[in-house]
Image 1 (cartoon, rainbow, N blue to C red):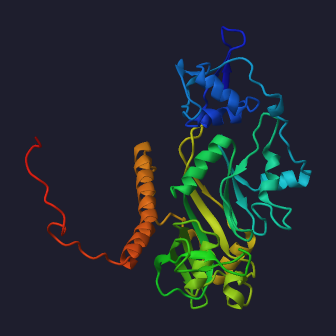
Image 2 (cartoon, rainbow, N blue to C red; image 1 turned 180 degrees about the vertical axis):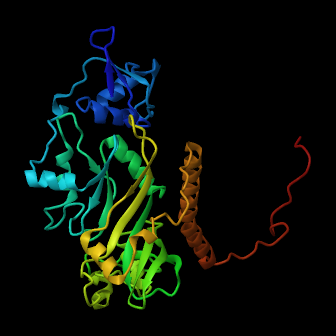
Length: 402
């Protein structure tokens, strides 16, 4: 957001930044002028006091980078005055830990190599996590707090993308949701998969009785889940090194799918039981690593707006196990196994939404039609009316009455 002096003393003018591109007008105020309430924004829009490039706008209209937004004076709601951002006080050790994880920084993103054993977010009895360390990247009161846009399991290591601003967080989240972001994982699995590559298509659901902490395959009620895999190398019948590419993003998807085909990830006792652990010098830690991420970066200044392609080095225990089993990391560059999914145009998104709602209405009508048909079948049939004139009823005279 860039504020420009206006000829009128109290009228403010702002140039919409790249980070605020395609944001709704009311969301722009919530992000940039939170002291102005929604009711005030609505009134200003209704009376034409807010202008975008000189034109009237509605609160739900979307803004484009470079447009000039005219904001009238006043409007500050005492109850909505922005408080100073709450920055968690971190120790020098915690700040150093956060910065040591960084493998790439751009105007829109901070890319970390998350170590195994560190949770992405806090939860029950989890006080140490990546989210709690992000205050290390807040340098002053004008710097927005970075935001998580996706997750890795606590015991999974590798590439973790952090958005620098609310706008870049929204952009990255859309790319993850639309599956245009491509992620490749490396894993060591027990045994030797019969097929060198394939797609595991098995719906997943929360396993009853586990409080949602464990997933299982549920063909009837599970959510669609697909994983593409490729065997890179084999250590006889003992273990294999595989590349995994999630085509959907379900909880514990890669772990459940590999265990389901009889080759659990080494060290994953939760889904592989005792069979997931190898004897000898192979570590008992889980061997699942987010090796590479390729994602389109939003435009937000110099050095951004293109492809963000990041590779994370293996953690020590994984690298040691690779050496013990005779695997050479140079055998794979972790190239995605699928082609990039092109982003949909605005018109394609509208058509997809129409198809979705049309299908939803169709599914809603089906039960009603079934109930109607059942009622009609159960209703006793009435006797057919006799044809001809009713007995004893005089015939209606023809012609005009005189």
